[in-house]
Length: 393
Image (cartoon, rainbow, N blue to C red; front, side, top):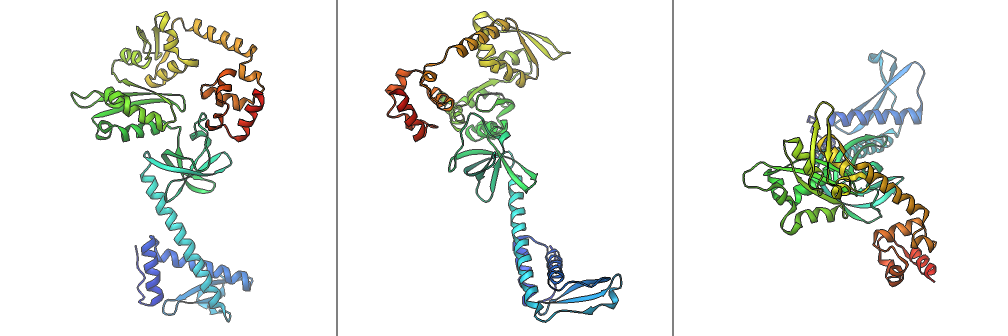
């Protein structure tokens, strides 16, 4: 950083401020001069065919305005209006304050850009349209819709763990983007909860995630004698459970990575067992045979298990016999559409029904037994609780 040579009180003060905030003094001075000239033009106007410049007296901190014919600066003459010093000083002060704010914001954003891919604890402080604005300490993070989990309900003053994803240029300038849906969040949580992952003894090879639903994470060991899956799961599952709790109950499958594609695909389709795999490497396809009693496990709810396994391995997975399961599931869905649930018969709103079913309340009898405590369920407000009581009567 350059330093102003003049040893005056003004120069010393400007040098000190610029040094503290990381601003180049020359840049600050040029900005001040431009702002002072703009203030002069606004208040006093300009003559046609004339150009103007501003000089700063480093001894006194005063400004002088000069006028000269265009492209003939050597013919300049001073036209500083009486009392203009006060206007110039106020303008200079405003420019310095603005530059300080810009420098502070730049320094903060640079700090967070170095922390990209790491965790941060934050609190949702407001909503700006579809975006959630999060207090993450020195700055505010923005969580756009694509970084949110549909199954999660966000509210003001809610504290969560977020992934610092990136610094992104937006219409409002540079912003810190935070995420709850990115697979990197799962990786960072395992790095925090599992010492072997943090030290590099266990390596996370690949992650496939459907935020709020299920995640499959493939791990391998870089040291002899270290069990990668056991390390991530922990004694009695305490480590993986800590990650699940941070993700609001999202299911997590930790599997052993293998260089053998057949073994890797078999592991990726867990918890299904007795799987046989035939590969077509040219088409990047895998034909999978599964015992009939394991078909539903291999496919998963709405095809989620096989879909995540395909993402994890990079192969299209075709499960023999899957059509029967899909048709059966479609029939069950059609049957469910034609016959209303017990909660629907009560005339409750769709949102209330969804919240109750998520809490394990699916029948009138169960709802009636918990009607006095139903307001404590997350997502059921006083209005919904009153709606439930009225419908039960």
